[in-house]
Image (cartoon, rainbow, N blue to C red; front, top):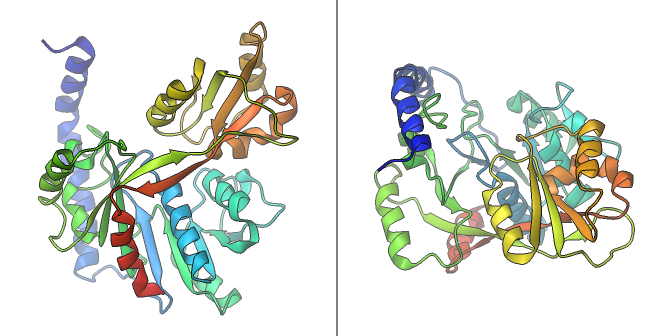
Length: 350
């Protein structure tokens, strides 16, 4: 027997499906106009790699970009990462500098710049065609451009289109907005040159991979590789100041699209006291910090832990935590040497 929440969800989907069909028709028409070259796409002589998804929510785009940055830095390439700078308080073209804030360039761009510094050029522009042209004017020796969250940004024609979808919520089990979370049709997967299943369990077996492959083959081109990746967590480190031994009792603070994976990890390694789960891209306020500190002031020997993305916005409140706020580093890794298959695709740009 179906639970009440499941019944409510199914009813909601059924009621919203007519709106999803209207949305689907509009998006399909737009893509059709681009495919027929009625709407213009701009190509560039420099290699452009697009990383994105077809569902609303977190699929691991930033860890994927960081993986690509590491790869191309090893190849001695000069890399630029370009995004629209989602939720920033500015507009137009901006290049990240040491004086930039997440409010000026967006939290994900700020996270990347904090991690790589001047090894990588990080730029934002809501008009990514103009943004790329501006970069090429300012950096004549630029080798490669990574476009963040650009699968639907059809105005730029990339040389490689990487599509991400999560292991827990694959796009083929979802519906179009607003009934589901898909930004466009499942068949938009045909544009992808590489499809990556992200946030997989490290214990995923061959049979499960095969079942996913069967579903994906309904939508992607037959020659397009399907790869499986997971998230690896490193030792948490203190935000600012000296490193101290982290307490086993932890309070988790997240403002990301899907915190399931990180919460499961924290539970497996620490004693999770409480999880403060804010909405994605949340801009923390002093009232939030005072509230969560007050609610935990009677607890002894606890540490607060947050994501790399949230650390970019919480670091300005670090003094309030009195050396108890830690960040959990993550990186994307591939399962069963699938990274070799990805590198085969990337070697074209070496």
